[in-house]
Amino acid sequence: MPHFFIKSETKSGDKITISDNENYRHIARSLRARAGEKLLLIDENQIQYETIIESISNTEIICNIQKFYLSKRDLDFDLYLAQSPLRSDSQTTIIEKATELGVREIFPVLTDNCAVPKDALNKKVEKWQKIMYEASKQCERAKIPFCNEITDLNTVLNKNFDKILVLAERSTEISLKNYLTQNPIKKGEKILVIIGPEGGFSQKEFDLFKSRNLPLITLGDLILKAETAVIVTLGNIVYEFKG
Image 1 (tube, helix red, strand yellow):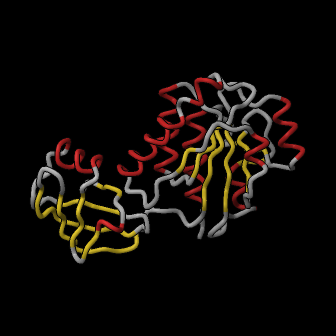
Image 2 (cartoon, rainbow, N blue to C red; image 1 turned 180 degrees about the horizontal axis):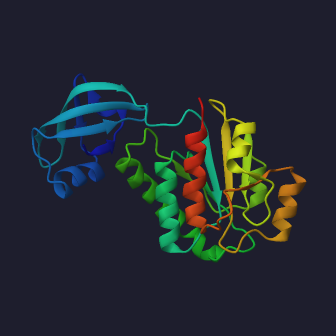
């Protein structure tokens, strides 16, 4: 069932009116939806509406609400990703999969070995946010995650997190599974995952992590590409969460 984000103010009684240009064009023009078809809508309060299209005019779509409820498409803890951006296609994959896996925010971090120049990165944040929006619609996210402006490790580490996990395959202290067994994630906690570029972190960055007593974590004996490491790490964290 197609899934779209709406504002709660568009609801009146048992009907929802869709008249904003983006949703209207997507539903009426791209999908060529017709009266009688079903639409799944969600508002800023995470209320999910199962609806049936009543009518489509030249300016608006009227939907009848069949049922509504609080969406469950969210994690019970706050998951954040600080990641050194890769080149175009690989970074698109990371943005999409991180969104599917429930990340609340992404911090694109300019590391010493980042393969993409800073000037080029600054122009990509808006594009990444659009990718997160579209991915949220496709996987029925309750909330659209946020892509922050380009930043650095010090700035991210100065934010308030309950746990910070640094993935560092070649200089590790503990496996991800063992770390999560010894330090289980609790409901409502804020968890930051840090993943570097293909070239890995510099010695200066390792010194920064050590100065803050952050665990250097491995995913095992295999050396993974950065985009694969993001997917495996986030997937395992979600899986290991006990609630």
